Length: 231
Ligand code: NAP
Image (cartoon, rainbow, N blue to C red; front, top):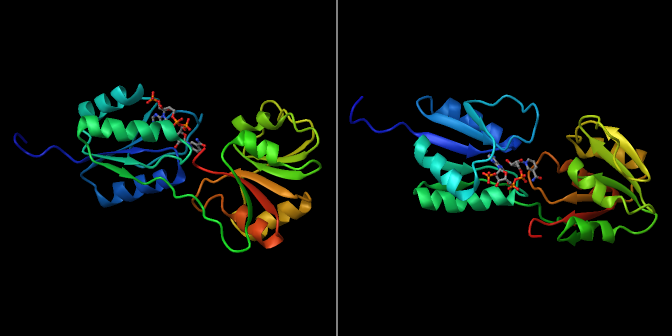
């Protein structure tokens, strides 16, 4: 209708479970609004999402600012993974250029609880170097980070992956466990005990989905080499 206010258009920068849940909530709560989730396009077959989906990079800050203007985005939400730092930085600048309000809903990092034994490091390289010789390590990292640990032929690694990789992990001494992370500390404890794990290496991703292994490590008194979000 001429003269009527433009429709509310919300762009969610996504790629996380939290972003998918948010899209579901917003689609249900705002039937008259356009709810668009943006994905980087890294996952071959992403799970279906509520609302509209756009895929691929925007072309830096300028590209995102242009997209915000051209699409008539009225509200931008950053719900990306806390280690996806570039897109979050771009969102701050692009929102300011385009004059669109930005809501930051990225996960807060986990904080150390009583009973936790954390060796906190800034980078994955520091995590690799912090592993003591002879350790048996649950390497709870994305597949793109595994090869960094290849030089540690004095360590036994347990690598968990959702899908069987096309080529086996490039680690001299490792076991591959296929499946998703366990939902409860009890399930994660079974894995840690079955593989006689002495250390966990992971990044401080925050959120609930990957937290069970941290609780299991606490219960077993195992050290966690934790890569912080600041590195
Ligand atoms: P990144 O380093 O922050 O971003 C690199 C570039 O990828 C960005 O400059 C942007 O390209 C594009 N991009 C990233 N997220 C995008 C999105 N949601 N929609 C459109 N373009 C996006 O990001 P990353 O660490 O590669 O992560 C990529 C995506 O995977 C993110 O959406 C994130 O939420 C998800 N994810 C990441 C991790 C992780 O550990 N990093 C874990 C789970 C999920 P242009 O500059 O061309 O716009």
